[in-house]
Structures are given as structure tokens and as C-alpha cells.
Length: 180
Image (tube, rainbow, N blue to C red; front, side):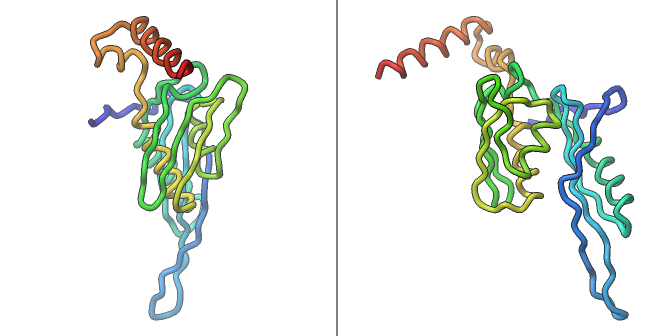
């Protein structure tokens, strides 16, 4: 399911650098060094993007990463300052699980998950990372988990219900679950 591209022009995006990595290429005269960066941009209001940049100098690599992140923006539906439902995604050898949390919990997340969810404007969240702890893979897995998020309205529309009917069903299911 391809989502439409979001224009970053009207948004006030904040940049966060997740990782700066010096990489080298061995050539005849020795080693050539360059820098790769992982950058997250977000407006704190549901819009978030992730990008990588690589250049001979750090500022150029950051600029390229920001440009890539702005081209890769998505909208994350939020329910009071948390995610709408539990989500799990894999990228390479990393698996990330995002779990909605009660108001006041805060963001309980590691090094790769925290900048992505905070840039999106999520204030309460529980998360767990499985497998590799490579920051690049963790950020991309988190971004994929956020991409899978659906709003309550879209879920209700898919099922042919109103928002109120969907909430009622959830409450009935949770009551039955608590009884058993």
C-alpha cells in the first residue's frame, strides 16, 4: 500500500542526528575517508521522516541526510500522545515492537527508537527491540512500524463500523478478557 508523498514545505521540521559514521575506502594511495549520517526529521505533530547521507565532510553528509528524510516523510496517526495500536516491524536483523502506553508514562525506548518516535510527537510509548542493535537498522525498523499505523477512523471504515461502534467492541472484548 503506497502512501502519498507529503510536502515538507509548510511544515516546521526539527532535525535529529542519530548516527555519524566514518567510513573508508582503500585506494592505491591509501585510504579515502567519508562520513555517513542517519538523520530523523519531524514536526512533533505526527509527521516524521528518516534519511541517510554520505559525503566527504560531516556537514555535507548531514545536509544530504536531511534532504533524504524530507523526501521520505510519513504521517503517523496519534491517539492522545501515543500510538493508536501495537505495531511490530522488521528491517534486516532487527525487529522493533511499539506498544501504546498510558498518559504520563513517557517514552520508554532505546537509542534508535527514541529519536524517531519523539520527532513524530509521541509522548507515551513502550518499545522493545529484538535482534541486532545496529542504530541504522533500528531506526528503519521503527520507521516501518510507524508506517504501519492506522487511525481509528480508517480501521472503523475498513470494517464498516462507526468510530463509536468500534470503541464499544473493544471495551466489550477487554471486559471479557478480564473476566477470564
